[in-house]
Image 1 (cartoon, rainbow, N blue to C red):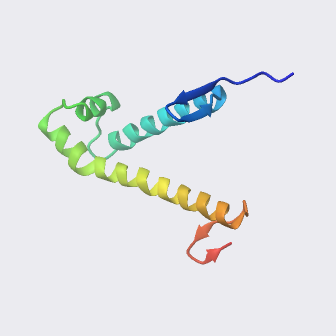
Image 2 (cartoon, rainbow, N blue to C red):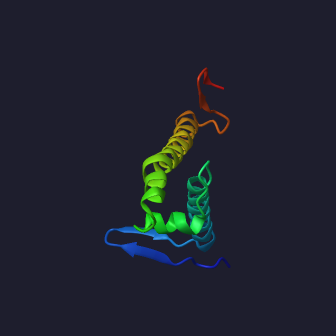
Amino acid sequence: MRAVRPAVRVGRASTVLRPVALVTVIGLAALLFGLFALDIAVGEFRIPVGRVLDVLGGGGTRAQRFVIMDSRLPRALTAVVVGAALGLAGAVTQSILHNPLASPDLLGIT
């Protein structure tokens, strides 16, 4: 006999609660945030990760705010957005073509 998974309902929308998938998504989001903060911290002018989080929260010195907010944060955000766009492009290509080996690249479908 299979165990029944609990359903989560919000208004008219409902989904099945999958604990393993939820833990995986939360873990990957935490890893993304940690690597995001590490990417901002590393550079010619090294800033500790704790100070990066402080500056992102509104603290830090004027020099640290300039380096993080004006120089490194746009670069890190661009990397996250481009990575997400490439992943989404691959998922859309594979779902449209029904081919798990299809990938969007410069030369077409491979």
